[in-house]
Image 1: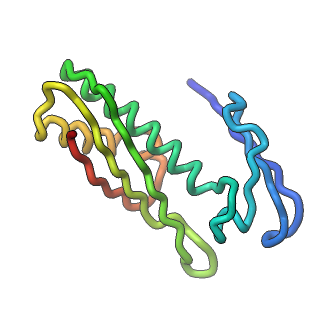
Image 2: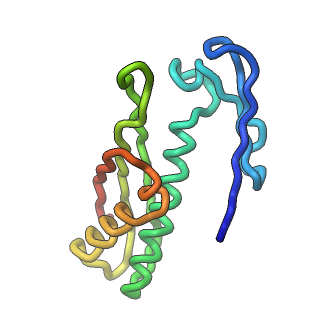
Length: 141
């Protein structure tokens, strides 16, 4: 079993407090986050964009693997995962995620590519983790 870790430190109340987020690999090290980076578009990161980055990278790797199973090797897969956080009851919830994918895959038919993209969307580990609607626009370039 593979185990990876992320960590966060928080100081202060919700609105004026500040936090930092780090990853075990130190690819992220003490990156700032707070109410203002999450809800007011200030510089710094937030949980939703970190989930989006994790989802986009996981999906892209899964798509590459699925295409490879058909002897198709992508020149490039570009994926964005947009995470939608909205008010729900007395709090907030991630209500949906939308993947936008553009891939250059020599010798791939449109149908084969779209089928591979759908399989990756449904089966990459981060998609399986998310308990919200996941939609996708995929195109072969």
